Amino acid sequence: MPYLRLNGPSGSWIAQSSVFLENPITSNTGFKWSNRLPILRITPCFGCFHIQPRLPFRISFNGSVNPMKYAFRLFSAALVALFVFPVTAQDFGVAARAGTTGFGGEAAYSLTRKLSVRGHFSTFSTSIDETSTDTDPNMHTTGDAKIGAVAAFLDYHPFANSFRLTFGAGKNQFDASGDSVPLESVCFGDEIAGVCDGKVFSPERLGTLGGGITYPSGIHPYGGIGFGNLARGDSRVTFMFDLGFFYTGAPELTLTNNGLFEPTTASENVQPINDGIESFAWYPVVSIGFGIRL
Image (cartoon, helix red, strand yellow):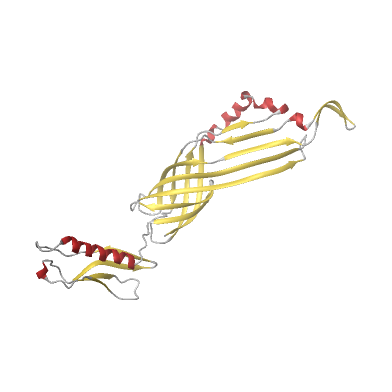
């Protein structure tokens, strides 16, 4: 019955060791091999083992031997070795990121020495709740703004180092909206000694000011450059930097004013604003982060 033996210096982090398959079967069984065969080469490193299969022998059978039985024994021996000795793939990594799309994380997997795939998620939101006393009338304003992205990237390292070209697609989740309501009445006319000599409009009659800016829905292509290979490298910790753009299409402003403010929502008033922000069709991405290879 074959069994495993680990051969090599113990306590060394740089020496190579081998797993040998010892077999007491003699040649009259029809199964011919040497009785000490290295089936795995193990190179320890800090926190991992690199395992390389090694089967430098020839096997011959005669008609009286069931080759499936011995093939199963070889497979079992290799399987046991893989479970006994922990292996770290060193081709997968995770990172924490911060940038113009918010705070989030990434996971990357190495496909080849120069190619890897990366998934990204980031988000950040903020809100305001303010009362202005230097306007006429005084206004109470609330609003919410959100940035973020969900994307998948393909990283190409042309020189097999940290520099990379990145292409991908995702969803830019930028969104901003707000509302303002008057807190006091407004006098349309002359006001003498605190008395309105004209028409007085209450806050309810004045109405509210509201609006928002959003990007078109859909998938947005991405292109950029960067430094840092999250899935492959000599060090387990890596610094990440990205500079690129999402092509999102031009953002769109919508107004939801009502009351006396409602005429300002007419298309002839909104369209010039939207024409002025067409140049914001490219959303800039600047991001830094730190990653660790698992």
